[in-house]
Image (cartoon, rainbow, N blue to C red):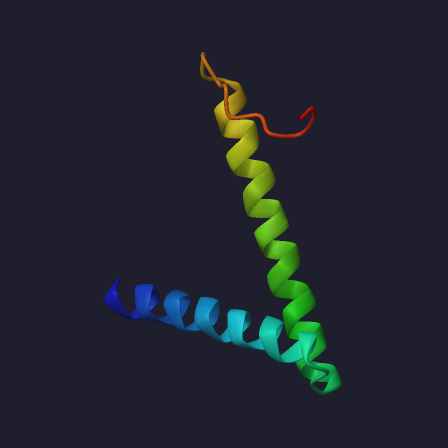
Length: 66
């Protein structure tokens, strides 16, 4: 179990490093890893938002207005 947690942590840190490196014009494989990392983050955000919709009193919407 500890090994799994450490592998997930290493993957998250490695993905973040690739995102920063890709912003600065890294090699193609870095841009691919960065795209995958950002895609996984978008899916996780979507799942988190859909989980909040079921609860009452969700006043954290900052999508529009002022």
